[in-house]
Length: 337
Image 1 (tube, helix red, strand yellow):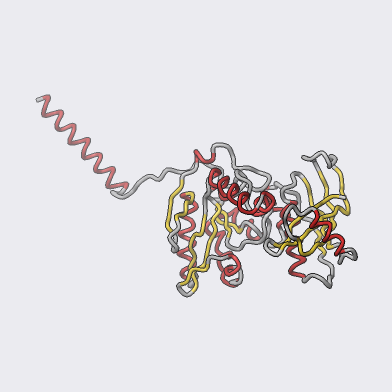
Image 2: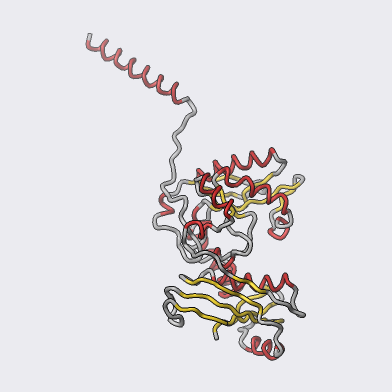
């Protein structure tokens, strides 16, 4: 009799288990969730939060060119919804890159330093631990036009209408455009229409996109943007080249902690240009400069992180000297008074 009761009990347990399975669904699997702050700020001044790599949950996908891409799970689900919506508009996108570990970023930095030198590596590659791609929430898209993969930045950027449509839909799925035009002194990077960031909050994403603010401004990490930019006039350089120089300076300034940029101006065509170019090449450390230029600007320092600046002080007519190489374009070679 006891044996019969035991069998009946087992049958009841099995029946309850089947009932639960029926309610949940045979293919329903509880997904592990990332225990991270989806609004964490990672940039040139703010490193990846501690224990992030232990708390993030990611998936891997293979894109149309056969590359493996790792993405945070919630960000990937949102991306798939965005992708499906865009396809209704006849726009096809894929993921070029997403998460890179700190260790992988260090490998990239080491390789660039070996191949191109420390200065070029520092200008081109994000410092390990300070790249937004570490989060798994930063996604770089590429376009598929007429069945062909368009992956090079210089090719993608020309499709302004397509990017405008993509950007108009980002917030609906919790994404924002991360690196805006004319905001390089805040973000530290030039305009990238393909670089989007998942923040897991549709309302906040809509607020950010509608405001035209950077993520830094929305979070209150920087003061209100009041930078005045004057490219002036030049008989030597085009407006596009002057803008390239200004972006170089602005991206560098974004790494200055607790400073506010007020003004940046082209100093005018140099009367002693040949002399300055000769001087630059004498200190070029193996590089061959083909041109030089100067900008001046004003900024305010709140709490200095370098000994040359004083606390809560305005600095006016500060100088930035730039030089150009045939291969790498413009770079800052000197700054100060």
